[in-house]
Image (cartoon, rainbow, N blue to C red; front, side):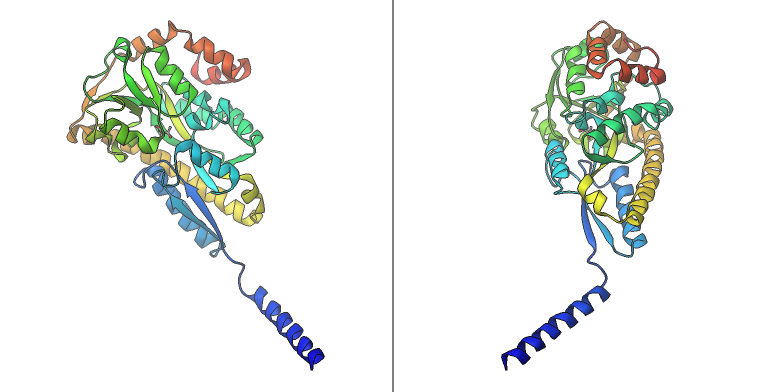
Length: 333
Ligand code: X2X
């Protein structure tokens, strides 16, 4: 009897739906990409945060980690974040500046003399300026930066002891206008290469040099393909944790609060990790065969002062941003 059959089917469908709500909502699975290797403190702490978030949300939010540029190059992954293909991406101000120019403000050459001044600025008004611009670019950005560190120049065959040694030097820099501009100001030949390709670029002598904080010289094993470390500390760099806005706004507020709490904990723990590592890494890298050079940093700063670098970037960032930076660094240029 067709009527009886359709009634039976309707009843069956209804009962199925009445069962469904009792099954907990399917967990949200998010992807977090990073260009750093899994043994870097930032990735280690974010992995811990992800585990805590899954537990705190009773499995509602699972964040899967994709370190070591597994999902693509630095800027390719930024596009994936913007499209929603991935949901979280800690990205250095250097690379982020290709989308949000002011985000490399914290990376101006020789701007900061110590890490305490960096945190005052990036947890303060410099960070506030940058985070406002990132939000205007339709990305979610968390409050505090992970520490990458003060960047040092490594080379394969000759140490960098004075500014003139940079002339003609084929050096890899992150895909970032400011990084390129800084090394061009010294007469070097910078090449923008995604971080995941740097080791091979050095190994195949595509470039002679690169520049990164000690933590990455160690965790990315650059000591295997580079001989000298020149402690130029020519710029500081850090990572903003970014999230896709559509994804983020769909999360329940309670879940968002848990993510914010755990990511904040991760940042503060990572900053301490990097500070401790810096004390031990020089010995460790010497043990791995690297030779350290302590160049006269003031000489590099004066040489940069004699170029158009500071004037150019004061114009590109604008008077307001530059004045905000100088409130923490003192007069630049
Ligand atoms: O690409 C780099 O050199 C790195 C990993 O330090 C940044 O992401 C800026």
